[in-house]
Structures are given as C-alpha cells and as structure tokens.
Image: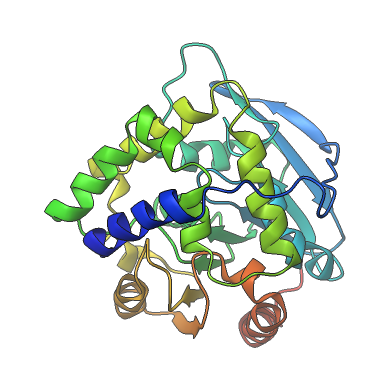
Length: 302
C-alpha cells in the first residue's frame, strides 16, 4: 500500500470530487434475502440462486452482496451461488454486545456452511472476504473445494505507513470524511456495475451504525490474527488469485507473494482496481471459467 500517494490522492478527491452520485441516474433495486441466519453473534442475510456445486461469494468491507451482480447470474447457470452480507453491511447485523471485527468472519463463514449444509464449496472472496476464505481453508482443509482470491486481504505488511493509514481509517471522523471518495479512488473502471456499487456505498452511509462498523473493521486489520502470511502455504486446494494491477489499496505485490507461497495457485492480473469482477466482468468470468474447468471438471458434486 503506497500510503503517501493514497492519502495525497484522497485529499485531492475530497476537494475536487465531492459531488454526490446522482440519484436520478440508474435506479437501485433491493432484493429480498433468501433467509436470515440467526448466528451466535450476528444475523446474516444470504441470497441463493442457481443449481449445481456450491459457490460462496464474499464481499469487501463497506460493500454488500450486490458487488457480485456483474457475475452472479452467469455463475448461477452452473452453480448454486450463495452470496452474503457481512454483519453491519447490507441487511445483516451484529447482535448487541458482539465484538465488531473482521477476525470473526471466518467463524461466521463456517457457521453459514454448517447451517446451510454446504459441503466443499468454491469460495470467492474479495479483500476481507478473501481473508475469511483463506483462514477457513487453512484451519479446516476439508471444508473447501477451491478458493478464488480477488485482491485479498490478510497479506499486507504492516510498515509504519500502512499502520498509520489503518489507524487513521479506524477513526470515525475520517471514515465519515472519505466515505464516498475512498471507493471512487480504488475503483478504476466506470461501468453500470461500478456505478451501482458506488451509489450503494454512498447510500449506506446513512444506515445507523455504518460508520462505526466500518471503522471497527479497519481497526481489526491491525490485529495479529489478520496476518496470514506465514500460514497460507497450508492451503491445500486449488487457488485462483486475480488482482487489479492498478489497485492502490492492496498492491499487486501482495498477490504475487501469495502466489509464490501457495503451491496450487494461479495468478492473473487485470488492468483494473480493487474489484475486478465488477470492473471487468466479462474478462473475469472467462478467467474464472477456465480455471474451474481445468481444476474441478472431475468433481461436479455438491
């Protein structure tokens, strides 16, 4: 993470692009969750469609399951696709007195699989969603069939600049200040899908607890358990690593390092930012389809 450039660019965004995304452009639609799971520390809304082997989609901090609108319909032609909202995002919530932290995400993911009787899913995780997928696979090697890690968290080096920015982003006043500008900085390609994502993020700022939740999640990135660098070699399933080469938040060098540490991994870069599946969905789907056919063609089972 080039923190100096990041902060400089964010300041520029604050002064020259503080115009809200027009609510008149493209109307947003809200879908109804398939159901809501009552878990020990959270209530998780999930959305399920399609038929076939199970695939779970995990979004980044500050986002929601709609991030995957660009690819979920196509994937549902071949897979039972389950997308979730992390607690404090979308229609999911933390229970009273629960500790708000990304460190709890892998356990939430495990509980979801158990409640829904999902065995050996393919898990696609973006950013902190990738961290949760890796942690689950490391600690429970038999629970996953393959991982698709997209600009994943859990690999960052906590140098003085990274630590300083995360501490800053953990402050509610700063999170509120850059709420709209930060995503517009790390999303590099404009299209209908990214427009919708930015619009949803802007709208979510008014949801009670959103700023507090996002700040706390960022604070958890400094916790020791969020760093999986020394553990990723334990991953035993096929792994596809897709990275936006222009991602300013989690730089591609971390994806390249992850590839070097994980034996059964493939690494692909796209000329996009932090959410490649929304920024370049057609190319992303082609890469994903090729990987799945090559690695999982003989295991078409749930």
